Length: 223
Image (cartoon, rainbow, N blue to C red; front, top):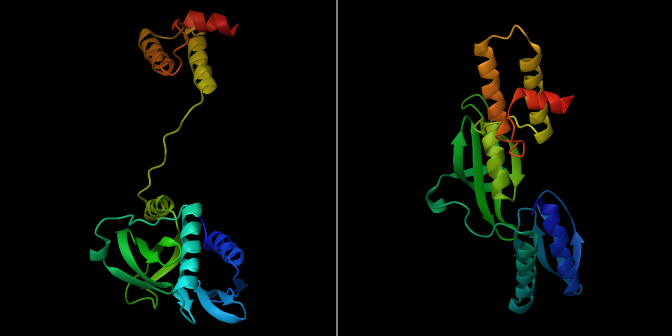
């Protein structure tokens, strides 16, 4: 699941198929009102909870099953993504209470269990104390633990940039340039030539189909 909207779209469609009438509200704290015939049966909150106006176990179970089916279809995270979460520090955001999972360089990864979406994740920045009225800001919401951890790593500066990669054709072009240099530069000394040959052999490890490593072979093939 990527967003709340994905879940609500799927969930509300399932409820309509079960005979409920869904009126989307999309206010600050309410996502929709669910009616059983003409009477209000349940309110669905933006933070993923079901608030029943009147509780009937049979009909409530239909809603809960629809939510379970939506979670399965959308691949929601329903199992605890981190160990010993009950022992971790609680953090209060504007959207509710979360558990702090990681903190580094003023960036925090938070997590909580919701009634509808499964586990919800937030990355945010931590404000300096005594200088700001808010403790946390720039909150980013996720429902995929891998995306949440990637966001935390990137925002905290812990993510290492991937090494520069070259395509097969780019490597072959580099080897060919080296071969031309060895063959055409008459002033090339033996030390530099040895280093270039070693570089060609190293690059050649990515080009196993080329058996002849000699500069002449490359030079002649490029003619």
